[in-house]
Every structure is written in structure tokens, then in C-alpha cells.
Length: 445
Ligand SMILES: Cc1cc2nc3c(=O)[nH]c(=O)nc-3n(C[C@H](O)[C@H](O)[C@H](O)COP(=O)(O)OP(=O)(O)OC[C@H]3O[C@@H](n4cnc5c(N)ncnc54)[C@H](O)[C@@H]3O)c2cc1C
Image (tube, rainbow, N blue to C red):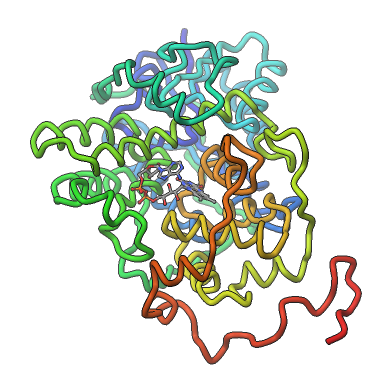
């Protein structure tokens, strides 16, 4: 008898979920999500893997997915603890024969699968390839031969057709009789999150229902046809798709987004904006495959480069950057927006990352880890890949990006409206950047 455990991760949706479709074919099914304690503990870069804002969003995703499962005769079994020991224990206690999960490029997730397999060699583990637009088998090259630049990747992928979303499941097998009811008990190490006070004028609500609603709304407006002209603006709901939080938690799939985009182009016509939106989704795709290929190098100081960058770690500078207290008002405004809302425009992300690396000479990994904690749409491959790119240790053949902050301010915030929205000018520090040097000695003024 097939007793299946479906380990959910970044696939919290009913629609276009090939892993759930596969799970629906088993005799008994247990749907599990593990909230790992490690996510709330500090890492080597003075940040936590999961901050309050994304955690609140994630809880919305879990509640919504559970409601959908209940309608299909199932329930989401949420367990708080260590992922590997939880999965091992559940598999042993309930004589699980098959584990199904969505394949992810992350080194952490892949290591977990290997360890689970080593502990329980009898187990059949099925990793469903559905986090990306193209499956590995559809790539027109071996992963080892992944093009070293995005433009070459784009050219190669131009000939490959994109699959349609798969049909949704209509019913699911039952849980095991002997299973205790999912616990509603929350351990003391979980942060209690208060509601986000977003001054952006928009809020992201977790869950497939909200994600699909937003997807429909975006593509029933004219915004995709104007995307290219406004995508670099610093502020505003319509300036970009705002799909990233739902996309990265798996409430919607990238195939669904592409399907909407293709329909939009068929009805309204293709233009440079719709093409540009596709190219951004393809950047996301490229970073996923780079991560698959290079693995742990994604997180190393040297990245993909031959030599490490010439930066170091200045605790005081890093702290000021995180808190939005640098000598650069535009950067400060961005950092306030990020901390208060979990979201930042792409241009904002580029400028603050460039500032940390080039103006403040701080090791880029601290910035990437701070983003990991703060971002509501954090994605390992895209975040660390973009940071590497700006730090000059990634896939950029030109080697690094330095944004001129003064020029960017004149271009994108000429009247200071954005800065006024996010910073209280009276609280802006007039102190010099450093009170101590890199080895913690006081700097004499
Ligand atoms: C330093 C840095 C860190 C970043 N970290 C993340 C992250 O953790 N998660 C994340 O989703 N995006 C990240 N981005 C990329 C980008 O800023 C966001 O995807 C985008 O701002 C999300 O808003 P949107 O959905 O409205 O994007 P849109 O402009 O509407 O783009 C549509 C989609 O295309 C993809 N996309 C857009 N820009 C990029 C890009 N530069 N690289 C790869 N994919 C892209 C995203 O999936 C996005 O949802 C980062 C960029 C930088 C410079």
C-alpha cells in the first residue's frame, strides 16, 4: 500500500501543482509543512533567515492552503521543529513509503533530501520539477554547460516552448487513521507578529486566493503594456507587477504568470513592455539554474569570481546601512521602506546594494543576508544572485555595478517626494560615517 508524505515548501497552492497531482494518486496521504526553528535564529551574518514580515505573510499562505485542502478532504499538518528530524520521525512512525516534494535549487533543501535518503534508504523520494518555467529536461543544454551570461541563456531559451499549467486536483486521498490531529500549539520560539503598518498604500496578503486575485487584476489592467516605461520608478503599486511575494512562496507558479502574459499579448498585442516583463521572468529563471549549477558558491564571498572582492566588514557601517542612517538620504529612505514593509523596488534594491559594496566597502554577503531577513519576496537564487552581480562576483560579464547615488536621486526622486515619505529629516544623522575604524579603534575627528 502506498503511504505518501507530501512535504510542502514553496508550492503552497492547489492549482498548477504537479506534486499535489502526483500525491492525489496515493492510497493514503499526509501533507506536511515544517516551520523550522533555525529560520528564527541568527546566522553568521548577524541576520535571521526569516524576518517578521515574511513570517506573517507565510502564515497567511499556510492558512489559505489549509482551507483549500479541507475542501478536498485533507488537512495541512504543520509541525514546528527541525525539518530533517521531523520528516524522519513522521516517515518512521507512519510507515511512509513515498515522499513527494517540489524540487528546489537551494543547497539546503537538496542536502536535506540527501540526508533523508541516507537515513531511510527504502523510501522512494519523488522531487517534482515545477519551481521554474522550464524543467531540467527541457533545457537545450546540460546543466554543466549553462551559458555563462544571461544574454546567451536568453538566446538559447528563445526556441524552447513553455508548458501550460497542469489541471487542478478535484479530490485527495484520506489521511492516516492513527494520526493525531494537527497541533495548533505554537512553540515559544515563534515570534508573535503584530500587523504591518505599510505606508506604501498597498499590502501583500499571503495565500493562493490573494495571489490569483492579484494576478488576474494585474493582467486585466493596462499595466503590463506600460511596464517598461515605469518599472524603474521608486514607488507605486502599478509600476511593476508585485507578483514576487506570491511567486516565491509558491502561491502562484511562474507558468501561471506566463500563461496570463501570453493571453494578454494575444488579446492586447505584444509590445516592448510585455517583452520586458518576460525578460525579467527569464532573469528569475536564469538565477535558478545558476544556483542549481554552482550550489554553495552562491553564498561564498568569492562567488563565481577568480578572486575575492576588496571589501571587508565594518560593523558600524553595516549597522547604519540596515537602520537607514548613512550619509545618503536616498539610501536611508530605501532602507526604511524595506524594514517597514518588506518590499523595495528593483531600482531601490540595486542602489542600496551598490552603496553597501562601493560606498561603504562592506562584504556583500552581510547585505544579502539582511535582505533575506527583511524581504517579503525573498528567493535564495534571485537574491544572492543579484547581490553577486552587483558585487562583481556573479554572472555579470562586465564585473560589478556602481550606481551614482547623486545621479540616481536626480533621475528618480528630483523633488525629494520619495525621501520625504520614508525619512524624518529631523532625525537624520549629521554625524560622520565612522566613529571607529575597521579594527574598532576610535576615529579622531
Ligand atoms: C540586490 C537585489 C536583491 C533581490 N532580491 C530578490 C529576492 O530575494 N526575490 C525576488 O523575487 N527578487 C529579488 N530581486 C529582483 C527584483 O528586485 C524583484 O524581483 C522585483 O523588485 C519584485 O517586484 P515585482 O514582482 O513587482 O517585479 P517585476 O518588475 O514586476 O518583475 C516580474 C518578476 O520578474 C522577476 N524579476 C524582476 N526583476 C528581477 C531581477 N533583477 N532578477 C531576477 N528576477 C527578477 C521577479 O520574479 C518578478 O516578480 C532582487 C534584486 C536586487 C538588485
